[in-house]
Length: 275
Image (cartoon, rainbow, N blue to C red; front, side, top):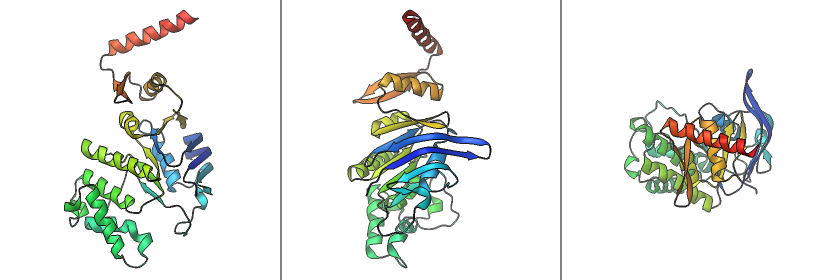
């Protein structure tokens, strides 16, 4: 069964405000695909459509061979889709282990089994969070809560994993741990789609890259590093320097405005020389 995602002619609006327009894109099976873009550009709206949280869209969203609107949860032959969005609040002081255990609900029918408890212990060990097992979820820091919610998704062992800004609130050590885990899942055959702000983290760990720009999605595959730098500059409205880091692309902000002006002048001069 295919684990790819195919989107055709997707549009979405809140009232008269167009958020997504004519999005046509495919996210390949067994890869870590990353959607980049600025705040408010429509990344999370696209995520919510794919996750099934927004249903009033125009166009087609195929997950495997199934249109998203027709997705039936709990079918024995259905793909397992797990997602972690940015915003989650709870006022109930559940223990961390119990929060993660709810991710196994679709497997355990009326009561958890031994393998469900073992899966919780395994995922806590993976992120070195075993010491939080019996703590109240509401007593945790923002970063710890983010990791616990990620564990809750991963304990489902999804075929497709959707992550909306999964490194928010995390220190650098845990950011790397989360993205390395995503890469490991890809090696095991999981399709991962991740929304991110930071192009450097994206290019360190991702396989395929997309940019939300002007209410649609631009596929960055096939662009060279300088072309990607320029399109990122346009999007983020910030001068960037392209660098090589261990064979991976990086894009650092240019701190001095006069350097930016000089580069733009040279680019313009080059264009004039060609005319």
